[in-house]
Image (cartoon, rainbow, N blue to C red; front, side):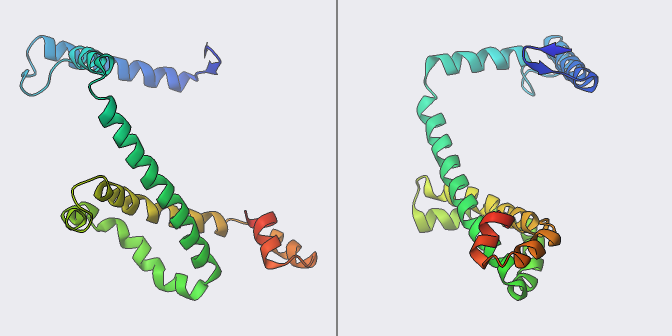
Length: 175
């Protein structure tokens, strides 16, 4: 079945129905007070409060600030992660040393560094950007390496046959 320009599969419809049923059950449990109002308000009240809050514009500054922080952390993580991932791909000995650190990186709770970043950068947006950067940069490094590793060897051999230089191979084959 299609909705607008999109075709939704049978599994998609089943997923949608299950989610809607779950929301309806939670709404019913909240309205009948089987779920304590102090524990959870009904989903309909959540949606109406959200709509009122967005329409009032009181949160626009906070939303904008958050989006700027996310964009800054994302752009830093993508650029730095790509550069480090590329360097690790070109330097296999360094990669073998760093691989175990990358594999265990997510075991470190990054948020414990937040007080340190507050002391280092002050109570502004920079500690939040630093935390976002640290959470994303390793994923970018790992995925850059994964992407480079998936370039078929036959394409690299073809580049050597055509006597392509290192830069041309990187730009025309790998990337």
